[in-house]
Length: 87
Image (cartoon, rainbow, N blue to C red; front, side, top):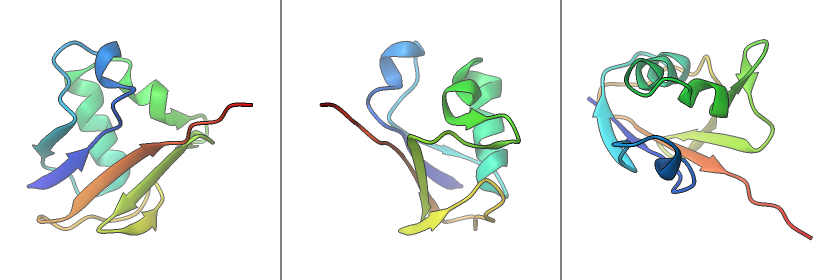
């Protein structure tokens, strides 16, 4: 199972969405699509047209920067980070 860690900014928007969960997926995009099946609308918060990750979203697989097509192993950890800006 792939361990997924999500930013706290997403959990209030999707009832029942935990910050940490385990899913089965073969790539970053497949993981996001699996989350979309459970929490409709989540994909739009992470993925822009193309598809590509939104500018303020960063994804890491086992500590390495990743893209949507990055493959994940069964025991991988996927961290989704939302960049925060202000001024």
